[in-house]
Amino acid sequence: MHGPAPDLGGPEAPPGQPGWIGDPLRVWFAANRGRFTDEALVAAAIGAGHPEDAVRAALERVVDAEVSAPVRARARKLITLLYIGGYVVLSGGMVLDLGTNAGLGPGPVIPVIGTVFLTVTLGLAFAVSRVWLGRRVRATAATGALPILLSVPVVLWLGVSGLCVWSGLPFGLFWYSPS
Image (cartoon, rainbow, N blue to C red; front, side):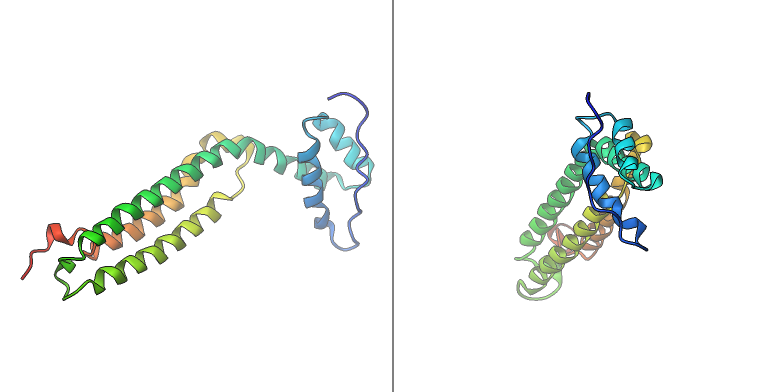
């Protein structure tokens, strides 16, 4: 964290595209934050001709990403466990249903179709959840961000899993009596 401010030496923004320099600045800030103070980095970026507002915005995004990284990692782990655990339980219930078919007709066709449908819908919900977990979390709100980050993935999981259970396919053995 000592020494002269580093030379940015990066490309200038093309005319008419001021937002273009945001990404290279963020990469540069992330690569140099441990070696120089934020003030020295900001001064070097502004001295290299980058607009002050773009420099400060890039630094803010890097700080936000660093501070919220542990919260994001925990949210990703919880959501992954929730979706995998739910899939194992629900598809296991459908495998148990292969013999009884939940009173919905002969053969294993319905539980197999249900398992395929569960795989696709839960997979899509998991993909949407992962995108949601990629949202920006401000450094000032990082400590309370876990419930917000978990809200959409949990609601999606409850919706897909609830519809699956409501259909009677998994565990139909337990609440449908054969006619």
